[in-house]
Amino acid sequence: MMEFLKQPWTWYAAGSIIGLIVPALLIFGNKNFGISSNMRHICAACFPANIAYFKYNWKKEIWNFFFVGGVIIGAMIATLLLNSDTPLVVNQHLASELAGYGVTDFSGTVPKQLFSFEGLFTLRGFIMMVVGGFLVGFGTRYAGGCTSGHSIMGLSNLQVPSFIATCCFMAGGFIMANLILPFILRL
Amino acid sequence: MAQENNLSDINTKATMANLINDDMDFEIRSLDSMCINDSQQKHPWWYNFKYLTIGIVFGIVFVKAEIISWFRIQEMFRLQSFHMFGVIGTAVVVGMVSVWLIKKFSIKTIHGESISFHPKKFNKGQVYGGLLFGMGWALTGACPGPLFAQIGTGALVISVVLASAIAGTWVYGYFRERLPH
Image (cartoon, rainbow over all chains, first blue to last red; front, side, top):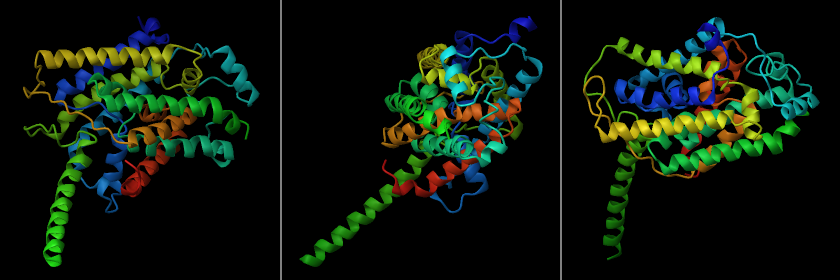
């Protein structure tokens, strides 16, 4: 059983479990699935700075802090207890493309040769980590949600704005990955 | 005559301003469905642990299904793998069926309150913000949920990425009124 769980999970198993988070949160307490709002709550709690967007009763949304806390704990549990030692099988074309940029270590969730504390002080690393992170935080809030809030929760409720947002998420990603990232990775 | 016109103009503007403030407050809150579907019951804070358990399940799935892998996201955006599309597509279908069932059978929360849904209004932020987020997603290989999970797997440098994301959120809040919506 443990060996079975330690193998990489299939898309249909993972997708089903994630989809069930929508009704689970609703039934547990009428909560809407969404992660990026946590970053807003953190700003509201720690540095509201008299900005209207952060002036609301964030304490009512503490449930979400518990939720992402669980995400961190779950990831720790999976890494420590359910780890299989099989290396990640990366698509051939991607592997050779990445090798061209000096990325050959495919172990770990993020490429260690790109994402490291030392890498922060390189232009490439700074762009990927700091600029990338900034775009995630700025963009998700500007869009009013991320893949959880719009693509899963919003589409589950048949919201057209969420469909539009999801299309734009994908478009932005395709543009970056195929047109811009090759230049950044060569820095 | 001219004076009367000016006064009624001012009155109209004042009423409009008030309307905007009330709507704005609701709008700011409704963006994240906050304080709209409040429980009418007061619960002690440790009732929140039920959300922690769902989060733990989510975190485990993130890691075991390789959803938080930067490499899998690159494959997704290069159409080199079906995996991520399968995950998101399945999640959406399961979510849609679940929501439909909740509505059809008027399923209530475990505390007996009715479950409410709120429509999202379109604004241009979904387009502009969506594109910007998508670009960040391809750069970092993570959307907000995976950022937290990656830290949980031990990729501590991702806390810098997360901090930058929070900074991005703050800057958005700062410039919000000046951005096209």
